[in-house]
Length: 526
Image (cartoon, rainbow, N blue to C red; front, side, top):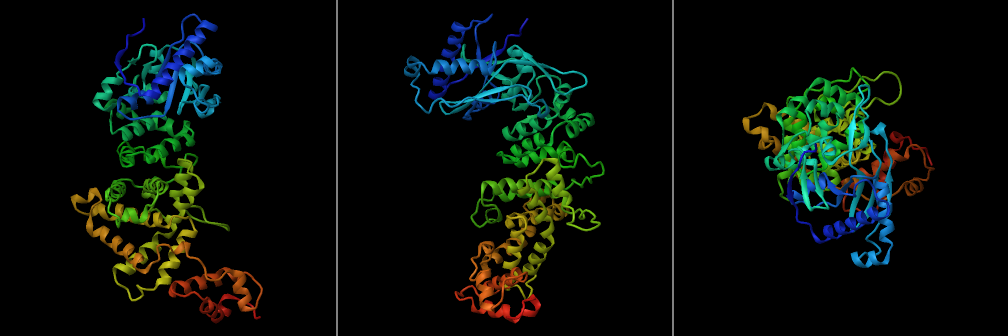
């Protein structure tokens, strides 16, 4: 006998109400034209219900259907929407109904059920049948069957994601403890945690993501199982790293990335996520002081002053995400470079491999990780030059050319500086006073403020986008020679001259500088 759900109500906005009425008419249309054993019942499920109860607007709505597939329902709905009387009744305009898209099953990527999606009244609406899943002993890919609303709720990752809004009754249905857990701000699994995580180990990361995003706590019983070695081994070996990467990216792009990294730290998930799963001897860095790095970044982020370190170094939403991704690999900062034998390019740093293989970081992020590691020593050296007031502190070309070099090999030179700061935070703040756990050790940050202020005073922050006074063709012509391998180095000499002579508009001085270094640069005689 089915359990009677706990219920509550939700106030729909006008657009949601418009969508609801259209879907209910579509359900009645289906009942009239292809009657099943029981009438069609539609429910909005999961994240939309949770967010609505939290007062957060969401434009993604999952619609669960009791007696038919999403594709079968949406094809009948589209048929209904072509009728003039339906268009008039629901005030449908040309842009209100989008095209149908079918997302096929792909069990190898843990996409176990076909989904049909369509844009309706500005909402991205997915349609799928209610289902239950059973797992064979030798496979993590579940067998999917039509199920009841209760069975569908119980197979979900968290009770707060297992709520339904029944369009027919206008009530929220809770077949687990979702409503109570919403009140308690608790992330709990609908079924026994060990079975939930072994059925799909990615749920470990999904719980971390929801707990950090919603600022909820995780049920201690679930936390205990999330660190079980069998669960972690299943997560490391059985889940595609692309899926792991998607979850980590969503965490770091959310509103509370520091909380996500702290959960990963506290639960001991780090070496399961940031690793090369195909290399049993891949090093596990010391994470005992990692918290000083991510707490430091969060403290910097909270400083909203225009001249703050964060605002100088993080200048876009993309950069904000990359900053947190770099913070995630800070523990690899102190590790020595992988050994290089033979010819060819040296292997990437361990942190790059952990990002590339552990979370399938794209090339852009992987290249940034490599550049940040490779340039850290030079960044620290220049910072020391500034803080110690060295005699060559005002050599504009020295600083400007360094910045151009960093940026040309990995991009986002400002984030490379930030990574050097965060690695130093992990190493330095760990030995500081009790207050340093917040990342607010002013003595430590003062050196970085001095460094960045000096770069601004020298006016070299935009050095990578400096417009050259002379290009290669013009330089070769001025020297009376043909272009050759010497060109790249010679142009660098020109740029350095420009940095020393910021008011110059005539490149003659730069050409003379190149001419004076003709033998050194290997420029042939004219």
